[in-house]
Length: 291
Image 1 (cartoon, rainbow, N blue to C red):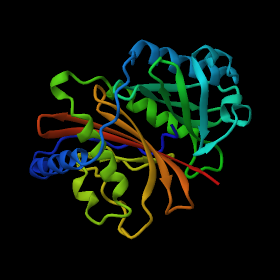
Image 2 (tube, helix red, strand yellow; image 1 turned 60 degrees about the vertical axis):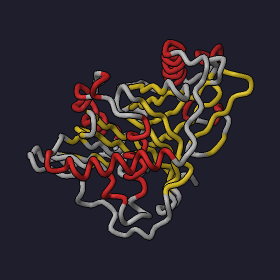
Image 3 (cartoon, rainbow, N blue to C red; image 1 turned 135 degrees about the horizontal axis):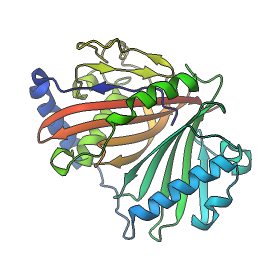
Image 4 (cartoon, rainbow, N blue to C red; image 1 turned 135 degrees about the vertical axis):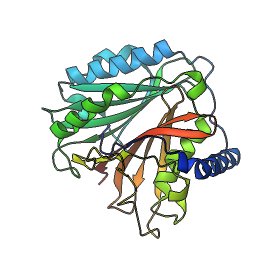
């Protein structure tokens, strides 16, 4: 991913009433929309093998490591455009300094983020599988020099510092995929909905990393709410594609940031939930021109 915004928040007991209200809203919203179709043959081992093959292909700058896992046909998308891999970032040899993969066992998909400081690139990729386990699509958002607030070295520094905090949740602490998606959607809706921020389960302290700009000061009262949109009459964030990992409490959302020169945008929203209380969550955002 272009891992451009990282928010890490801890629980705030004074937030519990509004969080409970948020969870109810998230449930109602999900109930009114169609649930994703589960894949009959979704296997975590196959997802891991494909994600590893993708990393090997990016390291080699060659599709060869991925070839045995690709469906016929399959689709490659980069920065919201369908293109040939021969003209894509996947054709470039990159030394990978960081990678992380999250798993969606309902829709049979993965989200992999990687950082190549010397590329330099920060990349987020959603890989989707068909019922036979083969890779049906690879959807990438890649940012490099010239992208908004881009500095891969600084991003890598902050990401590595945060890495130890992202571990699988025990079953008792996991939120439903509906709740996790609703949290990510609420954040993305803030540009076009004046009340969306009320549905985000904000925590305190919270820090944000946008591109390579880090807002945390190491204070107990660090907040991610300063700087959120105040103009709610902007174009919405459209074409949302989700990868939801309940075990990690995360949702990866790819979309088009239409109010800012139609930027390609991805959001990785982390949320830890237990019963009706939402605890620490994190947010990572990335941007790249779609033009």
